Image (cartoon, rainbow, N blue to C red; front, side, top):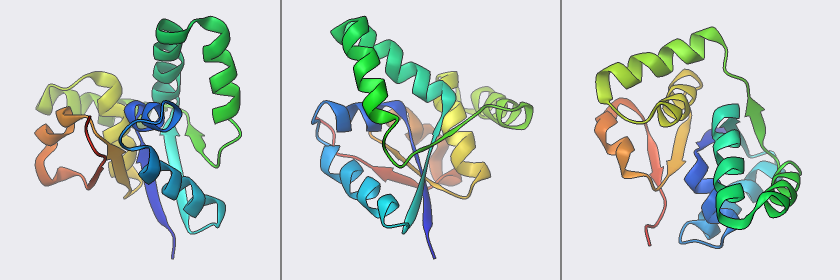
Length: 136
C-alpha cells in the first residue's frame, strides 16, 4: 500500500537548493518513482516556488528550475472550492499563511503526510501528520 505525501514550498526549495531536507525529499521522490508513494503539491505552492526562485535567482533560472521540477513524479493539484474553503477554515482557526493552509488542507483531505520544515505548521497540533525536515 502506498503512502501519500504533500510537499510544501520549502520542502521543494530544500530539494532544489541542496538544503538540509534535500536527502529526505529525494528519498520520497525515489519512492514515488517506484510507485511506493504518491506526492502531491498544490498549485499555489507550485506558484510560490516559482515566485521565490524568481526573486532569488532571476526569471530565467526560475523558469528552468520549474521545467526541471515538472519532470519529477509529482501530482500538481488544482485548488477547487472545497480545498479553498478547507484552507480558509485552517486560516481562521490557526492564523498561519494562507498558502500554507492550502498545503495543510490538501494533506488533511487526502489523508496524507505533510512534508515541511516550516514551524508555522506546529500551530496545527495533532490535526495533521507532519514529516519534519531538518532545519538549517
